[in-house]
Amino acid sequence: MKTILFVDDDRSFRELFRRVFQDEGYRVLLAEDGAGAISAAGVEQVDVAVLDVRMPGMSGFEVAEQLSALAPELPLILYTANDDMCTVDARARYAMACVDKNTGFTELAMAVSRVLSPSGRRDAFRIGLPPRPATVAL
Image 1 (cartoon, one colour):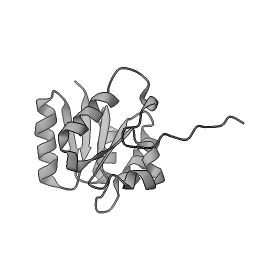
Image 2: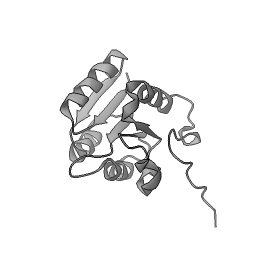
Image 3: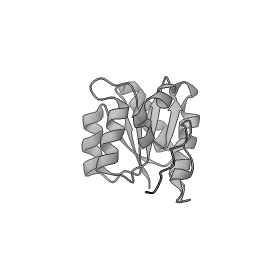
């Protein structure tokens, strides 16, 4: 069973997420802030983390940056009411997808499914994000 870490400061939204994704067959871990997310990812086996962008204290971008340092292979999805933020903040490069909260859970479920697909080429797509710049070998 795949495990999703969902991080959002809105308690009712976290609980709704848990119900929806548990019904889809996922194990769901919840965190209300960035510190809780980093703590959970350090202790639990997490297959994907879904991060609210706007949270008190540490933003989802900051959490993405720290989680990427802690677990570079952990796929991250940014989940926000303003997906334009994902195109202007350089820390969005740590994420595999940026999903607009206003689309409900359908688009998020598709992003989670695609990120967790066994294709092995996670860098080949970045849902809702610009492509990563190509690296140049010196």
